[in-house]
Structure formats: structure tokens, C-alpha cells
Image (tube, rainbow, N blue to C red; front, side, top):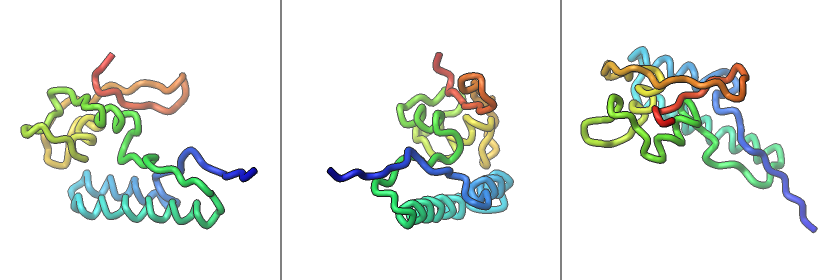
Length: 131
């Protein structure tokens, strides 16, 4: 019988908090969307490689989120409150940030989604307005 090992996910922020720094730079208007996306690509590749080098047989996919994984899932299901929708109906990374933070680098104002505690822990997650 062959036994394979697997992880459920990998911390997305990076060893030196590269994702958080790239997000903050983007939000401040000091870097472009493409620069932010490049940091995400590099982190995902590095994390997959680290797990492979550690002998993980089955690497997780879909464990990366730009901001809040619950909010990301909500957007994947098409749940975008009207106040956050793009005029053309598309959903992009700015939509995600606008819902989570209440604004996007474009400066469009909109109230952020309500945050909910995760099973009474310190972790808070965003909902996109569905109850």
C-alpha cells in the first residue's frame, strides 16, 4: 500500500510578509496591479516548490487568496453587493478590495462588507452581504 502525504494549504502571506507589503503598496498607489499580480505568482510558485522540496506528494491548489478566502469564495459564487459592482458587471481584484476595505485604488467609495468572527477566535472574515 502506498501512502501519500498532503497539506491542506500553505500560508499565503510569504516568509517576509511579501503579499501584505505588495498589497499596501498597491493600495497606496505606489505600485501597479501587474506588480501586485507578479508578487502573487512568485509566492504561489515558491510555496509549491517549498512543499515539493519538503516531500509533499499532493500539493494543494486554490489555497491562495488576495485578501480574505471566504470573501473570494463568495465572489466566485457571484455574490457582489450592488454598491461594489463594476459598471460592466465584471469582478476583478479591485472589486475584492473594494468589498473588503470599503474602497479600491480607483478611489470609488463604498462601505466595506461586514466582518464576522470565525468561531469566536481573533480571526475575522468578510461577508459580502448575504445572510
